[in-house]
Image 1: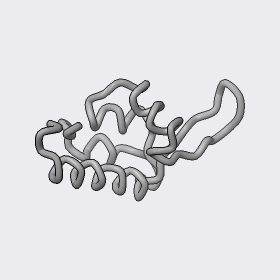
Image 2: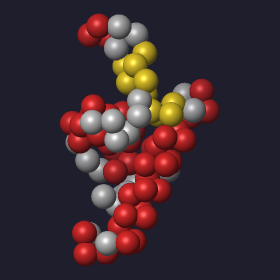
Image 3: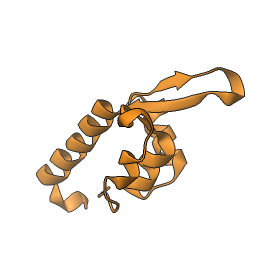
Image 4: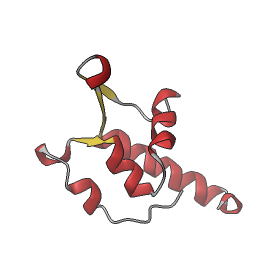
Length: 83
């Protein structure tokens, strides 16, 4: 997955962008929400839940997002045939 958007998508996050919305991450990578939720559910991309029940929102800490993106880049550099 190569990012097709600039970091402007992520910089629009409130509170200086410490936590990132799932939708913003999906837009950044140009993938569906279900792809990002799958990464969260599998534990690949850590997230926190804010609220309870149906109104619960998930957020990803910026450092966790950056670590995930760095791991993707390293994996792709090591295995360029995966692209």
